[in-house]
Image (cartoon, rainbow, N blue to C red; front, side):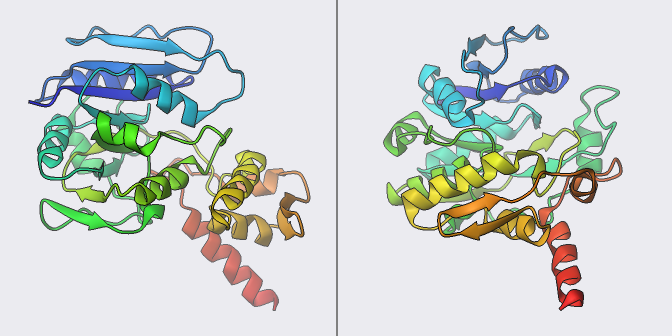
Length: 302
């Protein structure tokens, strides 16, 4: 039987992390441990759980999500590593679905994600209610029709909810810690895995429910790190990543490409935040919706 370590990272969002713990406590498959990379000065006060929880504190002031994920993975003792973002609540079948998929496939396993509206967790953990309320992100592919389906586009990798064996994670070399702040490390990891001969698989089930929190897409509030990480990716692979976000930044007049790469040309203003802000009645923010609007405006001008 697979011994499973669940790995996450957390900065703030104590309520979200507590719900992740409660979700794991309802798992049909035994949880061997939860390993948390803590990106703040204090450990979390968490609800009781029928499995060990280890909190590993990072001392860096600059958020490095890649380093945080690597730290949790290297400290984990399980043969199968399940990575969940702090705002995820795992369905009781998530671990069992990943365990079943890992017996058939090696490489990267990617489960389903359902987005919850604001207030969905106010009355506690109710998976029947979650399944009724949750929606799939329109920019992401739907679940496979069968047990699993091969994914041949490394750009689809997303660290929000995935699993792989500890041996395969070691083979990949982990996340590139040259990415700092927000953006880029996921796409890089997908490409690294592809180059390492690690296949990627969509898994039916293995579902996590994403808890509501206000956000911006495209992430204008992280524009500087997005640009820096896009250029870091270019230096490694020959082309920038996050090109849809860069295109949106250009149409907004925030950034443009130059002889030395992309650069921000003005400060982010209130109008930019208003345009990209997730509304309270939306379960998620959509880059494609904003980009479609910007493209339409550009077309009307020309």
